[in-house]
Image (tube, rainbow, N blue to C red):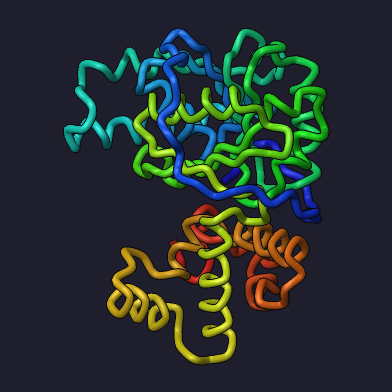
Amino acid sequence: MGAGGWTRRGTRHDRGPRLSLSYAAPAPQGVVVSDRIAVVGAGQMGNGIAHVFAQHGFAVTMIDVAEGALGRGRVTIEKNLDRQIAKGTVPAEERDAILGRVTTSTSLHAVRGAALVIEAATENRELKFQIFADLDRHTDAGAVVATNTSSISITEIASRTSRADHVIGMHFMNPVPLMQLVEVIRGLATSDATMRRVLEWCRAVGKTPVEVNDYPGFVANRILMPMINEAVYCVMEGVGTPEAVDTVMKLGMNHPMGPLALADFIGLDTCLAILEVLHHGLGDSKYRPAPLLRKYVAAGWLGKKSGRGFYEY
């Protein structure tokens, strides 16, 4: 949920329209492996998305304003691919071909010729608005432009372009190479043709797409973030230590990872940004971020990526 060099503060949000919730129906054929994919952002979500598409035969251009972020993103793809090979889920002889399908660029001009562009920058409202306004000038007329936002209105993002019918949400889960789900979010103007193409792309890379409402947090984070926030309150109020809270949830609720360890993995700054969107967009105090979460983010304790959050790494 990061994007290398793309960062900006700000989390205001206006709620989008209410749409029907349904599991994705089978889509007609129409996606081909010759489709070129562009991913904007080389952070943990961006490089994961690039990895998955390249693994399934697509040529991918990974774009970031920071050359260093592109280098780190490529190293991450190589490491994750090597883990898959060690586990036997990817044949070793395919390694070079997969990596060869990933090219990098620091220019948004590189989106030209892509059938699908996926924005995976920092979870920040104003930043995404700016990126989509820029993408609108460079992306081919018939291309689908998707956002990996985990909470921000697709309708609002689409309004910054002249092609709202081609804009859609594709919320991949972290870590992308391992997690099967993609929340697919239809904005107010998203066309049926755009939805069908995106559902097919998801299936082409082995994911299970689920169509959800364009509402703050969609489904995944509207449920997950209040749980994480309540776990932070438990620590802040002295109900239990981080270890105690996580152990209760793992052993008592059969969660594979405790909420605070998960928050560290996601990034405490990302958790705070999503809670801000939920609180502003839904207007309910139950989404108010815990003061301790704000304090940790202000201190630079962002979780695993910074070396310290609720745990030390």
